[in-house]
Amino acid sequence: MNRPSYWSVFGALLISVVAWGAESSAVPDFKLYVGNSRGDDISVIDMASLKVTGNIKAGERVHGVCLQADGKRLFVTVETDHTLRIIDTATRQTIGTVKVTGRPNQCAATPDGKYVAVPIRDGDSVDVIDVSQQKIVKTLPIKEPHNALNTGSNRYIYVSSMGSHEIDLIDLGKMDFAAHIPTGGRPRPYTVSTDGKTMYVAVADLHGFVIVDIPGQKVTARLEIPAEHATLKKLQYETQDTLTHGLALTPDGKELWVSSLKDDAMYIYDVKAKKIKGRTGLCSLPTGNMPASAMRRRMMCPSSTLRLGERSRA
Image (cartoon, rainbow, N blue to C red; front, side, top):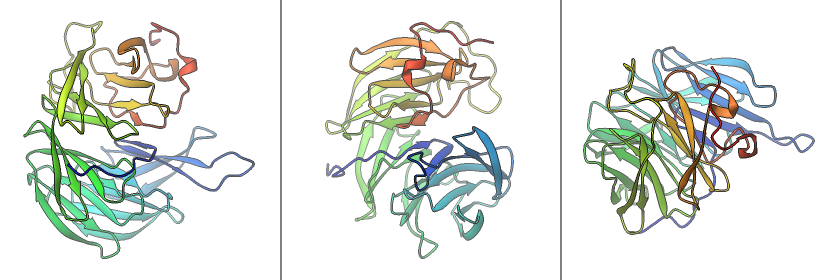
């Protein structure tokens, strides 16, 4: 397998993305873009004040959002009309619309904003879109695609295949698959270490995650997290085999945060010690029902705010 030559940090959520502007008095201008999947817009949150500063209209049933590295363009998938919207973040206006081949899921963009990959849930495929041309340049077959993920490479993008129990790596130079990485189960959200060697994958029917050796293309560990609740309550939007629906590495790669739909909480896994070190609501606050997508790489709360075994407060 030809692996990407570098894996830089790109702050993002599975359904939300963080952008940053020029620094003022050494304070970065962080913004959080959150897609409202039961609505028609994206909320813009100022990370300094933690306040919503505006909403960007995109189309009914926003599903995925992703951002190019400089934060100038936001890409949004819309389920009702099967489109990818290209949005200028400065003006908050749509500057392009690309019709995709079916119902889109979570997209991913290359850092340079040249390509966006859009999994097509009802088409068993993934559309690769050339942003400058505003058109699909390749459609690749993939069984039950779910999430696309870019880890800092302008050449490679990951897309999960729930139907094949694997994560597929797309080589954008060849417009073909570079690898098919087994996950030992039906993959949901996933994240990759900054060195590109290790993947952490939430899989169906597991309250926990699996660890995958990317160069070796094999599962090396399956970690089940003991839950406080024996059974899962009826889920409104996810299938009942979804016990966790979000996981993220801290910027230093020392902690993996894992969401629990059983316990409405976040669990913290110590990567070096290879064990769970705590359980908490996000930032010592309750997560609310069904915590889903967790932030990849850039966490909003420092781990120093956590105490071992801390519980979320209702």
